Amino acid sequence: MDTTVYIILFAFVGIVAGFLAGRMALKKSYASKESDIEEKSKLLVKEAEIEAENIKKNKILEAKERFLKLREEFEEESNRKKAIIISNENKIKQREQALSKQFEQNKRTEAELDSAKENLNAQMEILKKRKEELDKIRQQQVEILEKISSLTADEAREQLVETLKDEARSKASSHIKEIIEESKLTATKEAKKIVLQTIQRTATEHAIENCVSIFNIESDDIKGKIIGREGRNIRALEAATGVEIIVDDTPEAIIISGFDPVRREVARLSLHRLVQDGRIHPARIEEIVAKTAKNIDDEIVEIGEKTVIELGIHGVHPELIKMVGRMRFRSSYGQNLLQHSREVAKLCATLAAELGLNAKMAKRAGLLHDIGKVWPEEPEQPHAILGMELAKKYKEHPDVCNAIGAHHDEVEMTAMISPIIQACDAISGSRPGARREVMESYIRRLKELEALALEFDGVNKCYAIQAGRELRVIVDADSVSDQRAGDMSFEISQKIERDMQYPGQIKVTVIREMRSIAYAK
View (cartoon, helix red, strand yellow):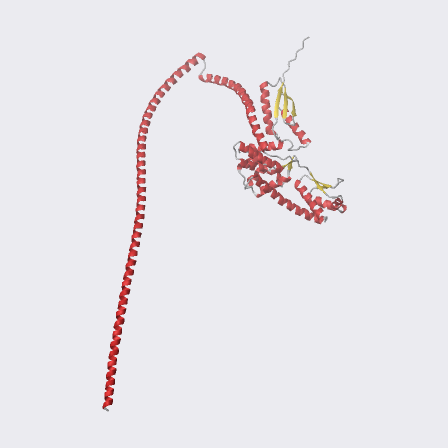
């Protein structure tokens, strides 16, 4: 029993001793770990301090560099502004010096002006006194002359004026003749030079339009198809196109006759399509003619656009472009109207450039000058007036409108380019081979020219020669003096310009012959 107790007691003491020993060992282990942790923390703190110190140094260096850079920029900006300020100050000083000099100069000028004003006033007083003295002397002389001549001043003045009028008339007449002769030698020469250069620089095509077109066929068998049974096909074709189809013995050819070139072209193209198709009957003819007419309208627009583009004319109204295209199918005295208008446009541009005027506007007016001839409706006005109204309607320049209306003297010329258009129109129409007149109209124009000259007093006979380019007038030597003969030639030429329309110019020659006859017996 006692042994067991002792054993238990020793066991308990051993447990307690072991517990204490383990606790002490654990405490010692904790103490060792705490010391390690403390050393590590101290090491970390030291490293952190070192790193913080490095970061601080870097930041300080960066701040210093930033500060130095900003300081440098500030100094540069300051220096620049100082330089600007110094420059402005110098400019202000220079301006002040210039103003002071100007002020001093103005003072001197003002003083000089005052002195000059005083001198002028003194001179005016002297002149006033001298004028009064001269008036008195003149009045005394007039009174003396009135006493000597027994005439008043008004009567003497009237006699002097009448004498001077007669002398002035004779001198003016001779002077006018000299000027006219000199101008003929110089102006005519220069004008011919400019016109010839213009014509030489402008390439022209000589083409004569006819009233018939020839449609060629491969064989005469096709003629029967075109005529049709009892002539129905050809009648339908003539009714649809408005032209005359002539089928005669001419081998491999059909003649299309008509005064309207558009209709002739529609008929020619329609025949071509019908022959190619082979189906020729009245219904087919009407269909083909309608399509061809539509194609011709499109071609007219294309021709107009091509023409204005080639001539370098921009901004033309579409309706005017269409009328320009219609000129291709219009002729005047055998001359194609589009070719004539193109030629006039080129001549106008060259001539305007030679004279220092607006070449583009002159070219535009030259192209549109005969636009009134292609108006589709029956015109009740001259083509020049109608063309001018059309140009105004489609917002053309006033100078262009005036040139169109005045190229046949229908309206007064107000634009500088108007006489150029008139001259170039005459050049294009009067050159050899350009136009073809019928004999009746040609003879009528010559008779009108001769009748116009016979209206003057003292004219015995007159003859239109050189194809109407010259008019020779024979006057009575007893009733017409030499001076009157010269005046008569001028008056006849002016009347021809007013009352007649003609291409080019007409030379008027007045012939006065004096014959003295005596017989020796």
